[in-house]
Amino acid sequence: MIVIAFFLPVLMTQLPPYNTMSTAYSAGVKIGMTIVYLLISLLFFFPCFYLYKFSVKMQAALKTVSQENFDEALMNMKSIFKFYGIFTIIILSFYALVFIVGIVTAAMH
Image (tube, rainbow, N blue to C red; front, side):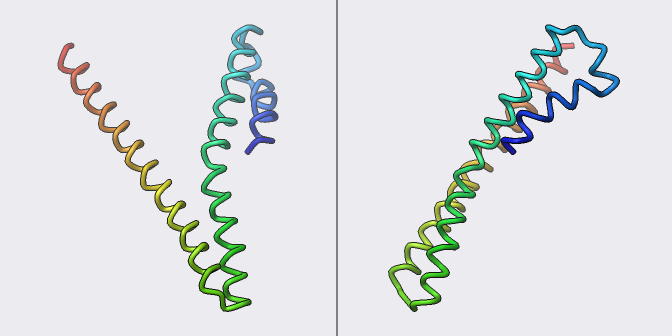
C-alpha cells in the first residue's frame, strides 16, 4: 500500500483524462492521493500487526501447548475485533450523517 501511495499518482497522470490537467492541479492530485493512501496504510497497519502477533503466539501455543501463549494470542485477536468494531461504528455513523445531510439538503431545494 505504501508503494502504491508513491507510484499510483505518477501513473495516473499519464492516463488521458489526467495528462491534460494543469501542472498545479496535477501536483495537487498527486499529493492528495499520496496522503490518502498513506493514511489508509497507517490505519490498517494496526490490525495487520495484531494479526501477526496473534499468529506468532498461536503457533507458539500449539507447538509448546502453552496456555499463556494461547491467552496472549486470543488477546491479540480480541484487539483486532475491537478495532474493526470501532471502525465499523465510525463508518456507519458517517454514512448516517451523510444520509441526513443529503435529506436536509434535498428538502431545502
